[in-house]
Length: 182
Image 1 (cartoon, rainbow, N blue to C red):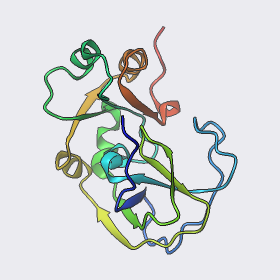
Image 2 (cartoon, rainbow, N blue to C red):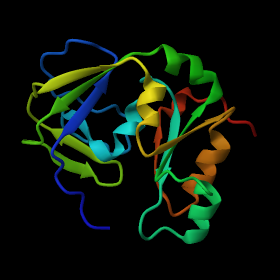
Image 3 (cartoon, rainbow, N blue to C red):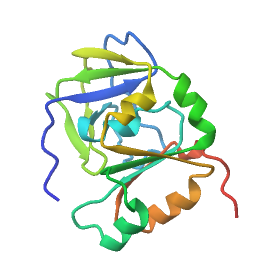
Image 4 (cartoon, rainbow, N blue to C red):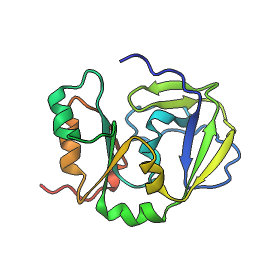
């Protein structure tokens, strides 16, 4: 897969309105990238859909890479026409409907790519947003993108299948998922 090109736009999604400046903060101790320095996080537009959900909503997101095994693509993506899949637990649907998010746009200047598969970018400097866009209809916003949204009672069976596959994935806020049944 060729390196992620520097996007023209980067974004930070928040449920907080009116943030005038984003100051670098330490990453959560359980973050898989384990960055040792305080940073401002941003995501490229290609995978912005992964964050168009309530902050604490657990989700499994995935897509086929050029080197993904066709059997994995068929098994997990099936006949979808979408290039990306985002799955959430059905119990979060009302929160998705009720949540308003704010999409802060950043210039890519000063940001570095830290995870190509997730399109994560970071800046060690404070960042002022270029603009902010309020999103009241998260389902409508997801529907306008190349995404299939799946609802499931539990994310764990899907997470386990995706983890064992050759697809690119992100597991976000899984600590908030329903308890895994043994």
